[in-house]
Length: 346
Image 1 (cartoon, one colour):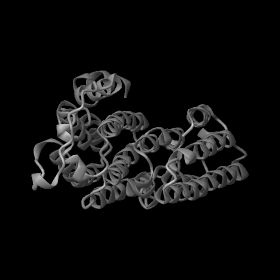
Image 2 (cartoon, rainbow, N blue to C red):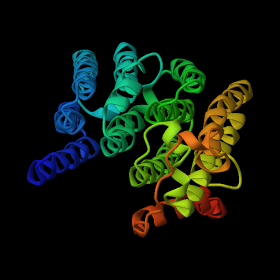
Image 3 (cartoon, one colour):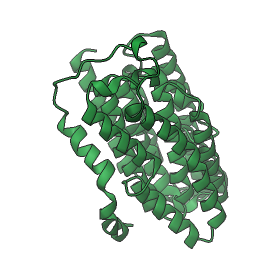
């Protein structure tokens, strides 16, 4: 893609995100979401492969439907209450429609079907933007309206997301699809705590974004897209693959890595809110996603390919690891000792 065009699309993404995050009026928030959707479409379909075009079409249709629902929800609320302010969403029907719209934007179950398909049809860098930056505007809208939303509905969506995100990722061989289902199960953790402690939702989102960025950038460096190529990628950059192993375990939420921190705080908060059964259930469901993270980690560093003669070994690269990956990996693995600082913020 032309560098100037690329720059325009990335700038539009930043603009759309900034407009949505900083707006108080529903129409401005909707405008930001629309700018974002239109800016990401060329980045999804830039390879001109039929799968990419299909992914862009699916993304456009779901996001257009979700945006229409956001507009419908805000108009219904304005009709009944006379308020266009995002934080003044008080009408029950509007809250219900908005929850569905944001769930569709984020890819929460049962509106998740588009996300793995779109991620599979996108390049790794676009997949990274879809998994992290594109989820920030809908998350801020949820954060701003969290006091009005229905706790039962969000808890059901969260537990279903954690369950299906884990189950559907078990038999995948394409790494982008595995990361899509991982994203769905992480969204479940964010949704379940949203009503009780919205700051924890944002903390979870930020740490998830850092860890996912590390994984995507590492895979982009080693040019790995499926498990069979991941098996032989260790010869290319052994130290980078070792760090990828740790980052994947961190994404799974194993102590003493960074990913354990949000899960620990969320379980603690749910227990305080007398929701011990929900905390137990979502913790057990995270074992499903732990299985496919372990499978990825196993393929990354621990096993050799079963038939070494059939696999072409990759040449070791002399290119130094980028500073961004080094910093992100450190943050993804070693942030747990800083948890007292996070506790003061949350």
